[in-house]
Image (cartoon, rainbow, N blue to C red; front, side, top):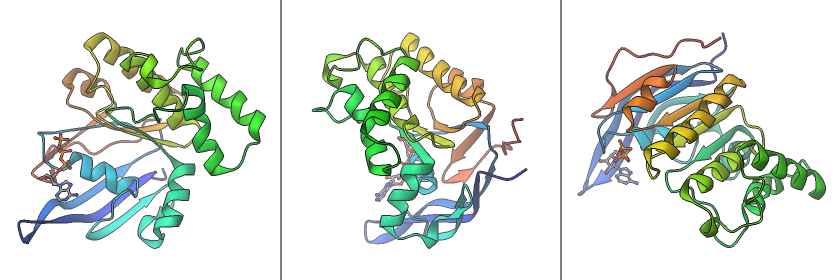
Length: 232
Ligand SMILES: Nc1ncnc2c1ncn2[C@@H]1O[C@H](COP(=O)(O)OP(=O)(O)OP(=O)(O)O)[C@@H](O)[C@H]1O
């Protein structure tokens, strides 16, 4: 089966205190379409760095990263931004919705950047996505006027705006209480059932165990014997 994410001998160094610190060492990783991968491990061990590399937000110091058939190292920053908009939906711990825009306007924005739908199509799709995550009644509210769980559901709708095959989430339930976290996680599981590939950093052991595969990062290395298998 074709891989949706392939990392080959990936290293990441950061300058720290006048030297280069290697925070990811020789990462080799294959993720298949439909996988639901949880990335776990202690704080400061390289999980977010790994996510940032496979979304092209950051660049590896060495090694190859191929996502959905594209070698990310071949793209300029401008092309990477456009590529990301079409191929990856990103969900953050602190939601990162634009505070002056309504939930619906937040969801419509990535569609505007992609430029494939006209205004009424964007509005219709945004409305449908917000309905899908249970926010039909809140769509015209500002992020600050809804709860954290509702903001995160809106952020998931935003990640789906351009129908990307891959959803990447960095501790998406880290700022939510246990019940709300479970509801948000259910939403991710549902997306996996619809054929999306999900890669999620989480500190929540229960949620990680519910993913189809768990990868543990320790001291910048893949620790456990936990290579993802094709889901379907
Ligand atoms: N832009 C940067 N410049 C320098 N060092 C960085 C940078 N980003 C991350 N680091 C360092 O890289 C290491 C790994 O950080 P990373 O954020 O990937 O860890 P993490 O496992 O996601 O941690 P947490 O669970 O606390 O979010 C840390 O030592 C961190 O200080």
